[in-house]
Length: 392
Image (tube, rainbow, N blue to C red; front, side):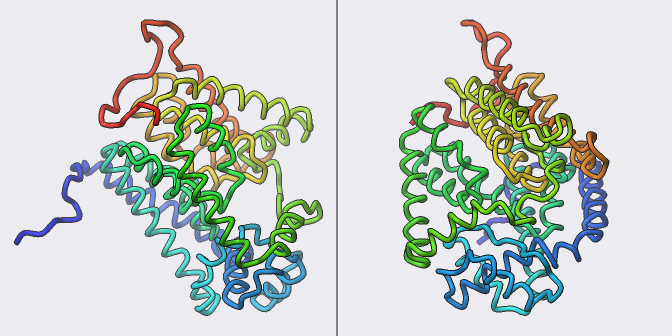
């Protein structure tokens, strides 16, 4: 009995790419070491607090700022103001096991878990897109940035990959159900129901609706109507200082406006409408790769509270576009895979707008690559033969 190797079917990786992976991992580890202590005291603090409140069954008042601050000060006595836990009730159940461990140990456990999740995504990318995909994943900064900050952005990437894989394998209902897990950070996934309606992917929409209904039912069962009302009120609060800090660092329309137009409301509205127009154009009769790419990018650009680590979701669109997009789109995707735009967040305004502008340019390149004539010239490059491009 020979068994099955974990490397079975995996393409051979050239030594140069393996060296690149090692060098990139060393660089991101060194960069992450500069922020990891701050992450433990801030970004991870709210996730652990949400898990702790869930573990103790305090779902009804989970999203009361004073309650969150009380728990956070037990862990980091000098924290002020509250680092808000903004995830829905159902997600707190997922975080509850973390609260079984001492805070510092739980933090490193979380970092290790996110790292393993990223490794799994990279192995999938290597199998699907070859060594070139692995090289892009190694250079892609938002995933490493998210791990160092104690965020959960790699889990959102894994959700996106899982949903796309199931859809392309002819399992749209299951793909939609997995995609619904992204509603843990729902502001990044709000365009998906509309996209599935527009492209008539009814079975995937049914899976998304079923998953969302289950999550809503779980949240209601945990927190009751009181918990839901408090959650909605919590999200609408304007005085939570750490809910949307440093808008100039956002990788969305708000970030572009903050850097180039003085945070003009009209600029944010105009940029958001432009992003939606590009998205609407791109998904018309779109094959799976373009649907996924355009919807992910537009969702990031128009959503509030989107930072560099949230761009982790863009790794899958980068892979898909480099494999199947037109030449301009592939160039834009390659630029988005490099660390340069995201490192510009370390610079002063207006230079830190480069990351958001890169995503906007990527979105425009994908939209402009849509076939413009009946012969199919100047359109998508068919390099994904094993993916079912039909609607449900």
